[in-house]
Image 1: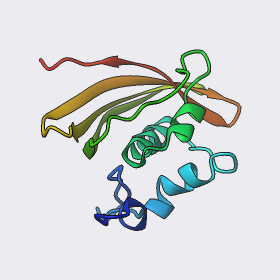
Image 2: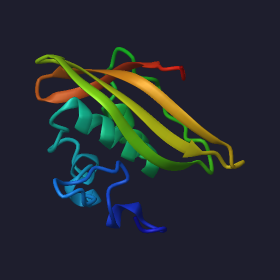
Image 3: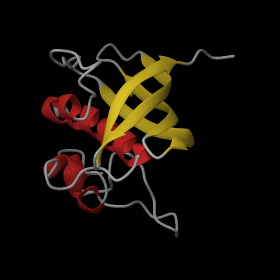
Length: 142
């Protein structure tokens, strides 16, 4: 990933191909972030990855557009100076044709240098041809 422009190198979400080579942003999450209206994420995991990438790139409009209307906040604020360090998908479960869960750990470092891990089991719902983030439960270490 380029130090100045994460959209020109490997995708921030960390997805790899069958040979374990990083997939570029344009072929991975970029196609969803750059053309949400025309190219929705095809499944809950892809939406989860693209939402992580949207946090990395501070793309508030994409995050709001992919958040289900029943739980969507009015706005998104980004903490200044946060550096996202990586995403680890722990599990994915398709519950039925329109419901899925993804468990993930996202790592970040604040502007003060403190490292944190966000471990969440997220729920997604599909309406028509679009998946939306519904809500999540934070997981505690244990």
